[in-house]
Image (cartoon, rainbow, N blue to C red; front, side, top):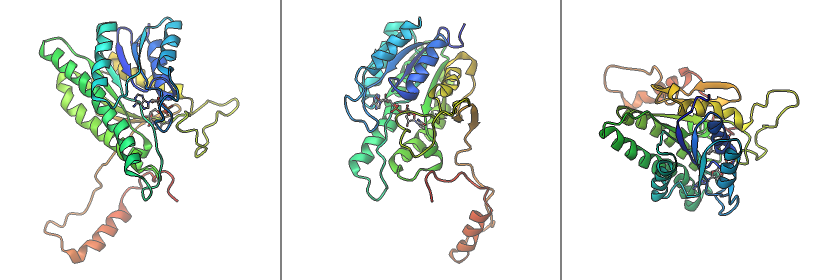
Length: 301
Ligand code: NAD
């Protein structure tokens, strides 16, 4: 018996790459899945992978699982409502939302157009908002009605959002926002029985197959960047086993899982009195010099 038996989850962007691996992994663990995918390209181009959601549903059914397809745009307000209704109509329950859909439009900050900026911020930040917001409303109503809620939000951040990434200002901004959103959701929704965690994955998908990183499988070695490596953590977070685990930002690469420290404060300097403008330069430079080394920005020279 799988660890997600009896659970129902929505997975957005589940027609390709990581979302597909999550949906298949969840189904293998007994979860019923609403497979959402708009079928767009890596840069959000319409119609690029039309039918992707339906194909994943077919794969799940072929392996004996239960799934339904949804082809809505995650960043449309009504889409989240439809996905929640679809989960309830098809499976009679909703236990988890895995927010994963998204695309990139990489550009240096000094050439990024307002349209590129808006499109990337919209799909990731508004996409995460719309889907979870409707689910949270449903879980709140359940909680108020006295029905026990044991629900999950799993968000997708990125190393780009946690450390920064050259050429990805909009993407990094959105992903950083998602990590912070996760902390707020964990704090606000805990009383309703809902946990919220985020995952920064590392996997070989069409999004990362740009040649910038060597993610190829090596003959005879563990395939570190197989998208399937990311699925067990997602299945665990969806399952009842992860009850009480909330407000965490996980990073996962191959079989290496770790917690992001986020924006932790350094020890700092306290004068015990108002600081003078004339002494700030020495203090600031000393703070930077003595701080624990942070991970570098991706792509920085
Ligand atoms: P991918 O391009 O293979 O898959 C993304 C899927 O999202 C596609 O199937 C696409 O059709 C769908 N999608 C895009 N816009 C949508 C919308 N508006 N509504 C519904 N579906 C939509 O990419 P991936 O690598 O699998 O990325 C999945 C998520 O993981 C993304 O949020 C990405 O930013 C994040 N991520 C990936 C990596 C990695 O190493 N691959 C690293 C960090 C973060």
